[in-house]
Image (cartoon, rainbow, N blue to C red):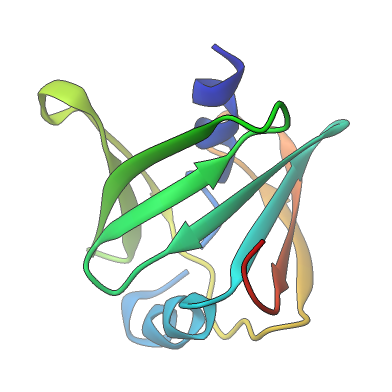
Length: 115
């Protein structure tokens, strides 16, 4: 359940489609570290529309994502989608705060490399 909550926390991370491409492209080969409370989940996005998420307990979840209509959508089983607005213009080394899809304050850092 914590893994799903962590995934939901990131659903609001990335703002408008044209500028989003650079944020996501800057993230390829790097790590989006998303902190909610005391927990940090690390996300790795791939150009082929797949991602991996490393939960605080070290477990890994893999999935698919899409970008459309100024949103990022995580695709779950049975075509369940969880979508949120995208953040724009972020680069490696940037840290920002925003609300997740549940209204919780999260902190996101785009870190160089992958763990």
